[in-house]
Amino acid sequence: MNNQEQLQEEVLLAEQEDFENQIVLYNDEVNTFDHVIEMLIHACEHSAVQAEQCAIIVHYKGKCTVKSGSLDDLKPRCSKLLEAGLSAEIV
Image (cartoon, rainbow, N blue to C red):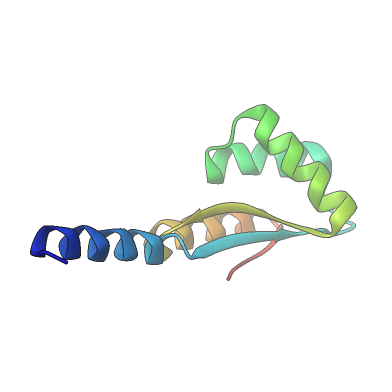
C-alpha cells in the first residue's frame, strides 16, 4: 500500500468515526406529533416529511435515530430537543 492509499484509508476511517454518534429520540405520552415534528425541523434541520416519518417511527417503534454526526454537532441539537421536553440521548 503506498502512502496516498494509506492516507485515503485513514481519512475514510476518521470520517467514519465522526458519524458513529447518533441522536436517538424516544416515545413519550406527553408531546404531540406536531410538537415533535416542529422540534425535529428546528433542532435537526429535517424536512417536514422527514420529521413526520421520524415521529411516526418513534410512536410505533418506541425510538428512532433522528440525526447522525460528530459529537460536536449533535450535542447542541440534542440539548434543543431536551429543552423542548423531548426524550433523547446521544449514543
